[in-house]
Length: 91
Image 1 (spheres, helix red, strand yellow):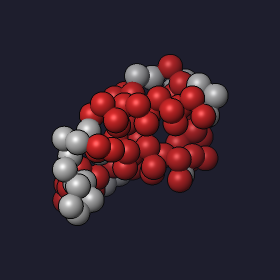
Image 2: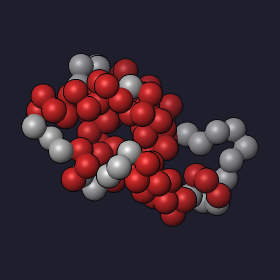
Image 3: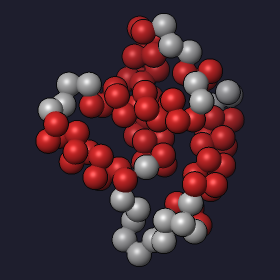
């Protein structure tokens, strides 16, 4: 889920950063789970319950054939990738 939300944030960075600026949020000061929650909220703030659940189901599933407890979808690897992504953005 984290990787999917980060990929979404990166793909639509102008919207995410613009939202943060408009709300007085320094995204670089957020903990990883807070940043992911912010991205989720941003995309779901105007969605109905059915749309939220569909989006949640989509972002929570790993790719077909991937074991979510090993490799790139493990919590440890996801956190490492988050740190690397934030580092590449100068944060």
